[in-house]
Image 1 (spheres, rainbow over the protein chains, first blue to last red):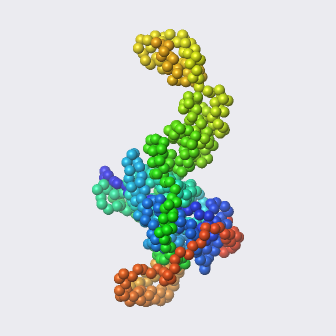
Image 2 (image 1 turned 90 degrees about the horizontal axis):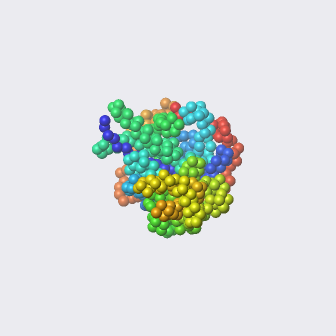
Image 3 (image 1 turned 135 degrees about the vertical axis):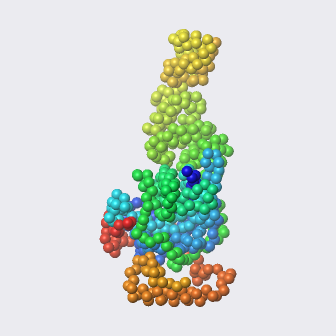
Length: 480
Length: 95
């Protein structure tokens, strides 16, 4: 069977966190009663004129700089003409031949090897309204209802080069992109709510081919998992088509998350023929260097820089640091926690281990996590100081999840202080040795394993509170 | 390149216009006249001249990011041919 190479490019739409819409003063607030954040401009009333929100340009410059793009001093808006019910004016104001940013990149890291994914362009445009289908799916609905609250909400569209070769690379790119957009605070990046949306252009070509295969554009990818599954499915579908001797059709397909398949999305509309032309109702944008340089100077620390800082200042391993910086909230939590503990690796271990497990399990993010950074730091300190064994620390942590009180309170309440007092422990050691003559004999006969059993017995007697290191030390002394 | 009736039909379809047969001929003729004019202009040497999407020497008309009330929900839906679930009711979207 022929071996194929997968070629993926992503188009990511990010809703900008402005207060008002791109071309009118309506609120951008998410949700609410349909058609309550609307005006003649976003409803596409004849004669209504758009007026550009300066903050949209500011955010687009910021995103462009954070994504290593050239910022185009002269850029302009164009009309993209098509009929679809969610588009009130029958054209979308977008940027065609003169977008605000070009030629950027993101470096992704997979299994320790770095790869640069090119960004072709970033342009500013307006979002469309929202269609609410009266049936279960778009295909089974006899009619739909349009809400224009979202119409005119500013977006940036970030178009990648077809540089990704696997679903994992696409996922890594999107994760990196999302983290950067979060850090620079231009988008709240909630994929489920649609404030960050991703379309994937996927094609396959036989190994050794120089020309890309025909691509399909997959829409409706509203989670990382959907992106990965859709790519995997689509690659197999295209392989099957080629193996049958047929040709892949260039088309738009929609991802059906429940069925786990991509489906052809034939619209009633004509083939894509957008007849772009310069938007005559808006003036071009001409940036001056001072504006661009001010935005550059104000750029916050980005994920890659933050990762380097965590590795350098706190000696964290690369893996730990990369996970912590992947979301802004996690990175901030870490920075807050290390203010009150010297043990940064201890904090990292909790964040990557029990904390992440708990968050995943509950389906929440760290912003909704009820344990404060200071309390987690205290828990780490108590372990470091030997007050709590790691096993008891987990027990305290479980209590903290129920009610976020200072760990010291729980240690007292539950009587969990680790016993490091040698005179108390030696008693337990002596008792245990007296009760287990066989193990003592085994040990003396050279069976090193017997000591593990004895330690276990002593720990059991202490209800897990004896300091294991001291137990080991005293036990070995007693055994001579 | 000459515009044909087929081109006019296609453009009418893109614009959601129903053009009667008699008018198709008129439009085909007029489209060709417009393109003929463009053909004449193409003879002008434009080497070194930047495309001119805007004739006015001004740029950057910005609005500050401030929310102002729009129109009421009722007013917004006043011209809707049909209303469903607080929205503009539209026919089935895909085939």
